Length: 212
Image (cartoon, rainbow, N blue to C red; front, top):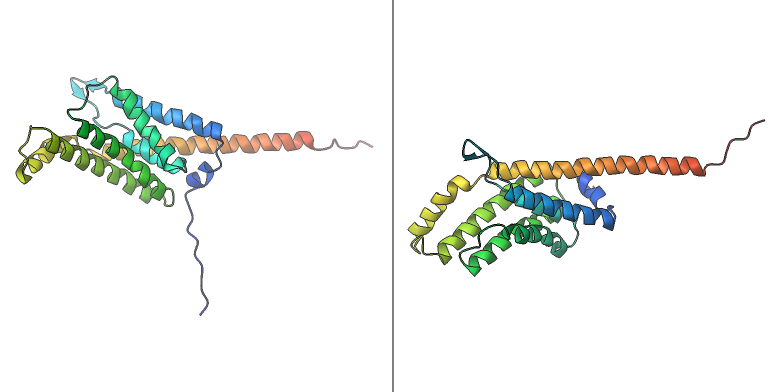
């Protein structure tokens, strides 16, 4: 019986991201950090009601994990954005809560490497998983390292129940679509410009036609 070989296709975005120049990657790094910082600090309200309560950190960390081949480099994107935005916000109640928040914020970077080998369903799953992990880790840390809730299973359940209104995975999913969609558009524009530039260079280098 003949063996058939099936090769999995990667998303077009992931394939082309590997061809980006170091200068382009530096621009993307700065852009992702800026999006995360602005998205966290800018919270518009309407009639005293906050329009959204989710930052783009899951989306930005996922995108960084997809783009940068080294996870340590990718992790600097959400961690740098978190550190910068924290300068304008109150501190955490405990050093251990700080560790939990930073770890949960960087976690989607690991998922980005998995998403890179998949397609849009993998991206959706990565966004939802990142949102859930952040909710569970940060609220468990708050329960464990503050005195606001009894350190019992009932207290833990009460802590999660109180935080449930702030768990909005669909908003994380929307941010992921915006960030990754924007990267896809930028990559498509860059590829088109590169093709045009190559055609112009080729046309300029071609020998002039002979007139009889």
